[in-house]
Length: 223
Image (tube, rainbow, N blue to C red; front, side, top):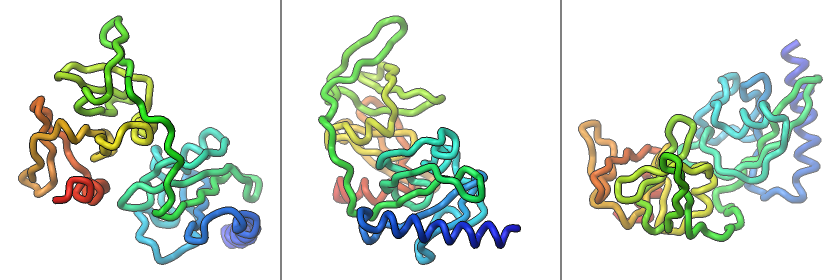
């Protein structure tokens, strides 16, 4: 039964590749997930986080497609590689089962830039407070909510970290799955006892830097 599914899977993938080849970049490749696991990669020479048969992460684009059965425009994902990449997702049917077709775009792809946020309005207790973004030191995703900080005060916003990453000025940089930092508020960057980088802000906040983002941070700050 499994061999029949894989045969049908590859046959259908060839059809999708034929349809998509006229508009997706040449260096893009495809992945398919079903039953909450990846079952196919169109390229074998990439260094994936995931292997065929492993469960897909719950914060991945593939998981979202399988849960919502809705297509997705180009969004940032980081479940397959060490660095974030843009990908698009489509719900498809394989042997009468819902599957997610993921088009992973080449690293040169850049999503069209929307107007950058100039003000974020955050909730503090029962008040809504508009804050100029250049006054924000950092932004955090915590307990399924997004929080930003000004002068050590915490404000809650309805905007997700992923959306903020695409619409904040260049002075902001993603350094962790849960953190975006305003580089103008960085006091220093050091290594902790495990040799991982930690950002110390002027308000005495300490922000961890994950391996997935260290390359971009070093490139941006030239160290």
